[in-house]
Image (cartoon, rainbow, N blue to C red; front, top):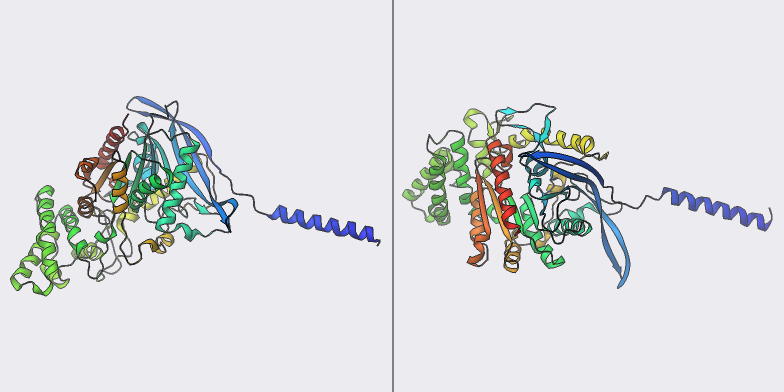
Length: 502
């Protein structure tokens, strides 16, 4: 072979290898949004709207040794947006909604309360059997606000891109920054900076919302009109049953009383009367008794045991044995032990069976099991069949892997709280309104704990009128209870209209 032929052969081989490498190189991540047109009649008013569904690529500016090194993809975040056709963007509010977990997708608020379609799941004593169903949501918030549902990274169809670490988003700050970037991108790309803007979060989503209000203001200069906080937790010190922290024992007591009342263990007294007594005791005498330790006299301790037992439906013997301190999972397994039933944590109207009624923990939350199947089936059907979005990834409704590895490194040696951030956001933006929704039968984020946090929010008195409240005789997802869902839809519509300043 001549030198020229050898060179030509080597060149051809190099070209083939280069072509093969190029061919095998994965495609650059790109948005895969799809749009579809729909209509819905709400109180004889026809709503024509566009649904936009798919994943938005998040990118990050990379600077190496002080030099710009590219704007590289980091994650693909799944969103479902509903925008009313022919609406004035300057006057039309937009609400960004997400659930909590951490590790939960937005399916619950999407198909349970806010979206134009909702799941048919049934309720306590009348659960809908598989394969479930979907129906129009005549009470949808879309009648009053455009809606954008966001699934944080590793929930829903959201994923980190190839080569990136999902764990970078599985923590307090990484989560806020990524969700905040989705909100900024959507607002900019859709020309909505002049629209009234709201955040709606549920459960851990209220921690996210409180942190986001501050982050959006300080990072992007985006001031919001309102926060919708559903089943609220803003300070984990009110919920964490840790050694030396007696606060949760008192703050959970009114919820225990509401649950005992619902299950017929407190006689025929009105709920309002029971709650009033429980709140008064939880605010004054109970914290004092817990604080006394062994300084409590025999008579004082006996009186406290009797009072706690009467309010919770538990026996005096049990209250005495747990030293007046009733941890919430122990309550859910003890309350109806005599009936061989455990009580739901997320919604204590639900009860279920256990394999062993001698234990003080539950293998399964009856409330979660009651609705998981219907919401999962409805979402997977809805995205493909009605919104025309195909994706072969599993839709992660609730990732316990994300939940169990969530990082709170920003709060090392301190408890998790966003009260300082929320207060700072309200002080800087005096027009920011906050709506808080409580479920009396919510055993995960008890209403009196949230009331305690709001009472200690570091804002001037003139801003306290910016906080509105709504209470429902239901659980964590109060919209599972039909009368509560209808009332809550009215409450949110009124809040958005009032806080929009239009």
